[in-house]
Image (cartoon, rainbow, N blue to C red; front, side, top):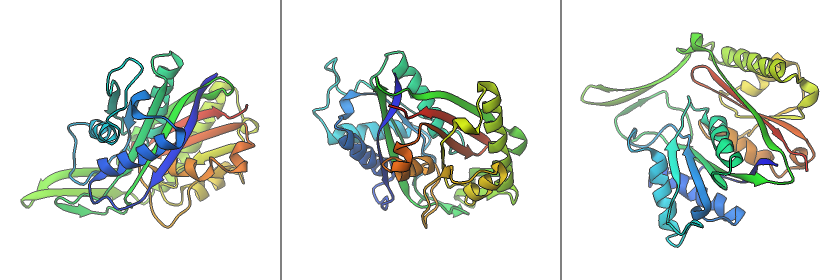
Length: 294
């Protein structure tokens, strides 16, 4: 018995109405796919980073929740109150999805909530100057809940490597009478991201007494570009790593795009142990070990 993936939805439509609306539309589709309304969800965590207006407060999760309630004004929790839900943002350098899954898993495992909804999305800021922003507008959502017949998420691990904190940075400052967003990425960021991921995986194996025989599939984000190819070389494994491969570059939603890409395929359905992996600024690496066995 554990926390399992119920439904996933992605969306790379334009965000004319803003990222909160784009994410809410995606989350609503995710809920509809599972036959669950927002009133049954006990926790909503937003892991998106970039917004059209550099919004920091209030939390984007609050705005997304409000839009979901507007879409379903009749949604009620079992307690009878409308929208009795805890919502907040959790970014973690663009790799917050695994961390959000860990938080939700704790609340589901303890019986505090029945469903957890994790969302993400990024759009290019429209206010001020923007430098080196290369990500496509995108949004994604995943719904998780308890399942009696599957173990689901078993273990989580996060490691941060502060010696590489300057490898990738994103800053917003006031300059020349307006806001100025500057993204910077060092030439060795990809190499360091791969090295940090490999080290974190090995540390996880050592702590849990596991090895590659205990992993059937690695599901990871395409970000940074080239990460999957270089990770395969570093780990010297083939045919175990999957990710969303498209002609668009996805930031915070990358892992959910990869989940959506693989979740209905026989390759995923037939495997037992899956390692979900994200790498973000920090450099921060997060892992989730998932048992897919019936």
